[in-house]
Image (cartoon, rainbow, N blue to C red):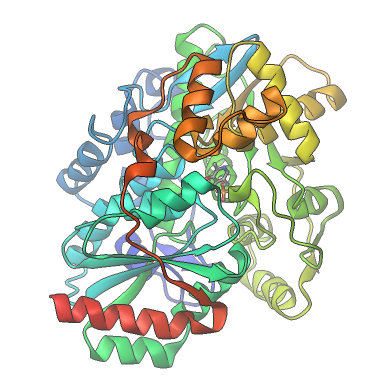
Length: 491
Ligand SMILES: *Cc1c(COP(=O)(O)O)cnc(C)c1O
């Protein structure tokens, strides 16, 4: 399998090259030349374990030997990294199906890809014979940062720097990042929103002068954001695995079509579902759920993408995004024409908007803050606690079902543990939390829901804060330069 840029760069490169580079030199994103069909009939494929599925799917996309791939998969999906052997258990409550993607180290779906990315990166660096040290630059809307830090901490030859919006993440998310250990980690808040952080990081990636300066010192940049195909491809696996769990539980027969509802921000998670569909997973419709930053809802309804609007801070901060990077890969797939993608992305950069046809396979829905709270309350009364992002997906699904009658099975993709957003979850159920402070709110949520506080974040409020820097957008490059100096001094 070769990879090409969505914007027409002529070079065809291997997966290991694409993983190390992160983004293409023409600022496009790498995409596989074709999306391969699963090589095993679906009736048999659904019998495989999570790790076996991961192996079979990744094998189609990567230029890795079986041994290399086995090493990555075994280490990534180990009992140390996931608190259930199912990895991504499917829960059915009151006729709804929830795919719980939050059993990893940081309690968010990002763990599914970021527990394997460091291994993919290490193998890729070795395969490419690269002697430079890698500096991972990451922008986060809250969850990618922590998951990437956990994945890359203390990995030899790689250091990692994370930029997050200082006022745009939950208290738990912030504390998870600022207490991060590991000599090779750095966490920086910025005065700005996620789009500012993402744009700042992208600008550094494509600044060739800065790149040369770093290379002269023996360093090169890569990305742990979903612009890296090493993030995207491992996410395909859980869509197959979810389907398999429905078959095994008798909910469907292999071959039946189903729907997924995906709470969406940067469009990485739902794009993996779209790739799964193209690989042969029987999916009818994908429902793209947005919060009040409903730029994608408007796009799927009108074919007009327009980021010129107020950026709203919501209680589902990991979806507070107006520039959904991975939509570029979708536009490429729909148009199959890099010059069109290049033109549209140019328009996005200059005027903040573009118009493009989409193929009707994805349906947009959005949910207000009030509806998010109501969704949490409704499921809570049925005995199941949703986090705010999953609640957006649940609310979106209910709207979709109201407008589209049918009996098709739907899986609601559950992207975070409710404990990461305890204050909002309590507020949804009780109106207002009785307690304050992260520790006591988690206790309150545990009492009212009858669930255990996950080990992964117990005692979070007692950990030492190790990262305190907050900077302006314009200072990002200088901060990266200082970090590389510090890394060099320590090695
Ligand atoms: C990142 C994230 C999302 C959005 O996923 P995208 O791949 O960016 O669309 C949704 N929910 C949670 C909890 C997340 O961390």
